[in-house]
Amino acid sequence: MDLIYLKKLDPKKANTLEKSIYNRYSERSFADKPVKLNTLSKIIWSAQGITDELKRHTTPSAGAIYPLELFIISKNITYLEIGIYHYLPEDHALELQKEGSFTESLARACFHQTFIQDAAFAAIIAGDFEKTKQKYSERGERYVFMEAGHACQNMSLIATNLLLATVVIGAFNDKELRGLLNLGDWYPIAVMPFGHEK
Ligand SMILES: Cc1cc2nc3c(=O)[nH]c(=O)nc-3n(C[C@H](O)[C@H](O)[C@H](O)COP(=O)(O)O)c2cc1C
Image 1: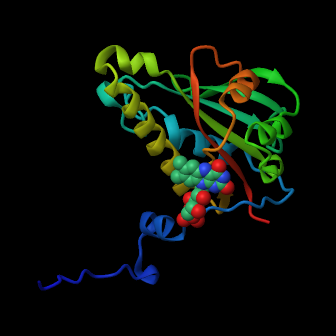
Image 2: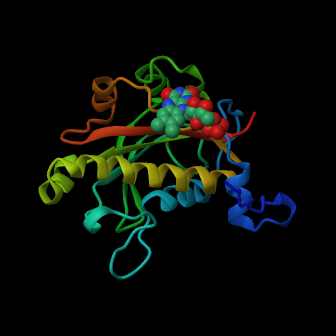
């Protein structure tokens, strides 16, 4: 059978989005250098920010239910106390949950992936699975995972665009991470450490 050869992307002629997709790689070493609060703001916004008066978000959501919750563990952000924060999309604001240094506890909860403790901050995506399952039953579970994937990819691409290093972390101890973040009924899905590349 004949093949239809497709045109390959020429990175020199690529637009901004194509360049971010092209240049995205997992990076696991972080410099000891602060990240600006406004940079953190853009990364969070890309994951769960609200974009219009219908309260649609930057990522799609099955039934527009929006079951994702975003947490930030800060370590080296300009003008932000170190601690654990919960993101409130409607206010585009961070609510302090716990003051103190928690990146080492986070690395431990991620089965001692020690590079995580060098990150300037980490984003943790958790899901309220019951919220989506109320409408979609068992199938709702996969929707929540799919939505977390969208949020991770948005954060990866905007981080590439902002010249920040990151990687998606799926290996962690659920119980330990739920305890650290005091998650209650929510379940952690992904962890992403961020920082300037070393
Ligand atoms: C769902 C998922 C879970 C992952 N978990 C980890 C992890 O726990 N630790 C880690 O170092 N990398 C993790 N990765 C990153 C992969 O190792 C990485 O994407 C893969 O090696 C391909 O490299 P690239 O991202 O540079 O293209 C994960 C990636 C995905 C999508």
